Structure formats: C-alpha cells, structure tokens
Length: 345
Image 1 (spheres, rainbow, N blue to C red):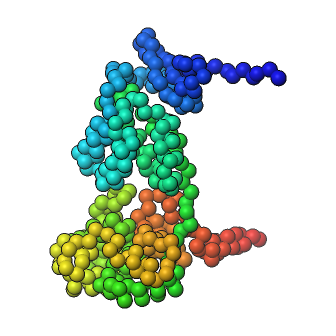
Image 2: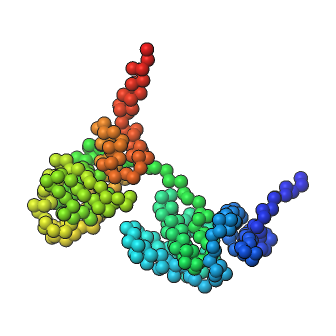
Image 3: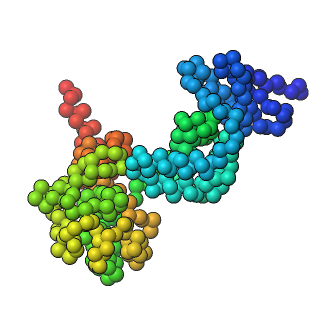
C-alpha cells in the first residue's frame, strides 16, 4: 500500500527531519525569523499567530534571539508587577509561582515549549480548574515579559485550557447541619456564630474572615464588602440569625479590627483551626467551608427565590454561575411551564 503523503504547511518545518521538534519561519520587514516550538500542532498555531501579528503591525521584541533570561527572573518580575498593580490574587499567584519555579526556575525562558508546560500540568494530580490556574500563571508571566521585550513569545497561549466540569453542588442537609452543630457545641462552641454567618450570608471564606466591624451596620442590617472576588463592592443584608451571630461576636470579642477573632482577641485568617475537625467529628463526607456558600445559595433557590435575586445575594458576576442551582427549584419551573396553559383558547 503506498505511503500517504502529508501536506506540507508553509512556514512550519522540522530542522532535523524525524526529530519531531518543529520550527516556524516567517518574515518581518524582509528579515527572516525562526522560532523553535516543539509539537507540530503548536508550531502551526504559533505560525498563524505570528502571521496575524505581522498583518496587524504588532511590533515583535528586538531581542528575539536573546537566550539568556531565566524563567526565575520573569517570575520575580511578574510577582513585582502583581504587587505594584495591587492585584488581589497576589497571594495565590505567589504560591503557584513558587511551585512552578521549582521545576522551571533555572530554564531559559525562550526555550520553554508549550508541550513542556502541558506535560508538567498533566504530571500533577490536580483538578482541571487548578491546572488552568497554573496555566494562567505561566501565561501572565510570559505576557508581562513579552510586553517588556524580554521573551519572543508566550508558549502558554498554545497550551489548551482544561475543560472545567461543574462538580456536584455539595450543600448541607438538615440532618448534617444538626450533627455539625452538635460537634461544634462539644468541641468549640465559641465558633458557632461563624457558622451562622457563613450559612446566612453566603460570603466567601476570604470575605468573611477579612471582615472588620466598620463594615457591619446593625442599624441598616447590612454588611459592606468593599473588595470582592469579581472586583466590585456589594452589600449583604443580614437576617435575624445573622444579626444574632454578629451580636454574639460583638459582645464576646474586641470591637476593633476583624469580626472573626479567637477568644484571645487574635485575628483569625480562616476556619482551619476548628471547622475541619468538627466536620470529621460529625461524620460528614466531602464537605469544605466553601460548601456553606453552596448551601446558602441552594437554600435560597429551594425557598423559591428567583435566580436573579439569588445572583445578587451571592455576588455572582454573571447569571450563568447561579443557573447551576436552577434544578433545585423544580416546583418553580413547573409553575412557569404551566402558565402556557392559560394562553390556550
């Protein structure tokens, strides 16, 4: 059977035939440029990007052939950029960057291939969402360096995004809540108000544990979050259960600084010191603090609250985030579809 010939793609080639390491060749202002890429598909994708940039008049860095910049230098520069620009996710960026630098810090940045980043992500037992966050760190680091002319391109652009399947929305059942409250009462009753605030506001853990008293208005029954995950401020109304929990903390803790403090008056950064232990005592499986937020939203929807209002209360930037909970209101959907019957003559 004759061997089927493969169509050659202009500008994409193997410098050493059979090496499976592909390069691209293109021209800028009449001068030939060459870049080592790796996989053929990645080379083909990058070639299209380079051609499109050339057509749009995007100026490429003058030091394309500079091979001396280590990725560690780019990482430090990117971290400085995050701090300088007041990015709220600088803590997570630093943590992820330190993990990346263990394997890529000594590498020459321009020699890092998309296939290497992809293989590195595959080699970690992380969820698709976590892998995408690390890919974003690579991407942002190269993007900042590219803008400063320190590298010739951004290999992370050619690493495919992992599909993030929305996992089952884990929320607290009535029986589990009773068991959890019993466990907290026995182990650390002073933390019960923190649970009540979480269940009745749906605040993210970082929002709740960075909350300070000036942000709480008992008179207006409101909590003001000035900096949220989606970058905007929002107000959260307090119901009776939340107000009672806030009052309990106000009476037993100092009235300055953070709302959530230890019994010794020390600010708490999160719930790790007690929540996980109580979850274990209660025999509750696959449940984290963030599931309290799922519980808050789920209970709103199951109580018949419309999705737009639930979106506002949860602080979701888009309605698509809230729609994930729509299946919890079958009665509401049934009532909506039955309205069509009234239109029949």
